[in-house]
Image (cartoon, rainbow, N blue to C red; front, side):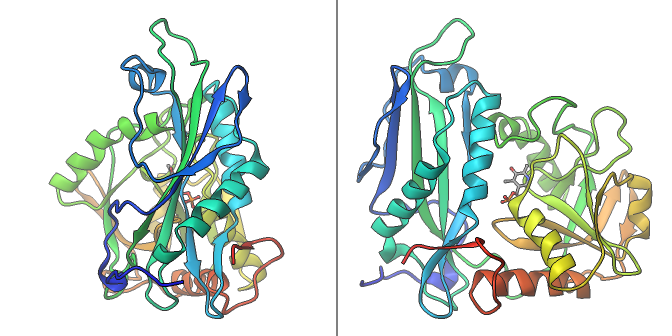
Amino acid sequence: MEKKDIDWGNLGFAYMPTDKRFVANYKNGAWDEGTLTSDPNVVLNECACVFQYSQSCFEGLKAYTTEDGHIVTFRPDLNAERMANSARRLEMPAYPEDKFIEAVVKTVEANEAYVPPYGSGATLYIRPYMFGSNAVIGVKPADEYQFRILTTPVGPYFKGGAKPLTIRVSDFDRAAPHGTGHIKAGLNYAMSLHAIVSAHQEGYDENMYLDAATRTKVEETGGANFIFVTKDGTVVTPKSDSILPSITRRSLMYVAEHYLGLKAETREVYFDEVKDFAECGLCGTAAVISPVGKIVDHGKEICFPSGMTEMGPVTKKLYETLTGIQMGRIEAPEGWIKVIK
Ligand SMILES: *Cc1c(COP(=O)(O)O)cnc(C)c1O
């Protein structure tokens, strides 16, 4: 297979159309078989439910080349399960989980020429998504849906090293108690755009959202979960029903306990205790972990002892172990690596 002539190491995180994408349609109460298509455009009725009432959800995962030359994805069964949960919360028909994995495999195979080579740091980002596609004007779920998967090659997340981030405590809320914070719905992102644009204007990389009810507990950022490390080396991640259950975070907590022999706790984290942590990181598929150096709460700065130049030592070990597992340099737990070819 001849790879595309792409400067893999200098790709950013931007959309580049690839040769094929997967499309399946739901109509009269059933999903069709689905197919690959070359057409990157979606043509819908002007009154489609997704346009009027934002009935949509999505997933994000990556395909990459391992050290021994296989093309793999990481725990796609958890993306399938999470997307089914997102769909049910939005009154959409879940796309069958086994079919989801089959469709991911088919789409990656069809775009093999765009899967970056081992060592480039780049990956093929995979974006499954689903939306209500027929015309709806009264407020109700659509009757017809489209499930699609697009892929796009993306560059190494940390070009020239992982520079710690500066984040602020947001005055906006991300998710209501009993709301939709725990599902990957487009609507959660639409309403976070204002907060992230204003954070960037003020010189911050990200927003830390607190729990909307009491504003005393740490939730997450717009697109990544928090992991903290205590001064005695315990890995702590916030517990809340309105946090999106990150697959990276769940994997890192497992790695902390079972590979690194650390204590790993999932519990409520009060903002007041954040100043006592030794390290802080943001976890998600894109970066695995981005170190946080500083958190600013209305002018009051919390500076982690790990500093503003490199990852803290535990964060670094977590990062290296999980990326080692993903790239095939370290043995993975049963079922974590789905070999595509
Ligand atoms: C997707 C997402 C994450 C990260 O989840 P991963 O499965 O690790 O990629 C975290 N928070 C939010 C709000 C997200 O949408």
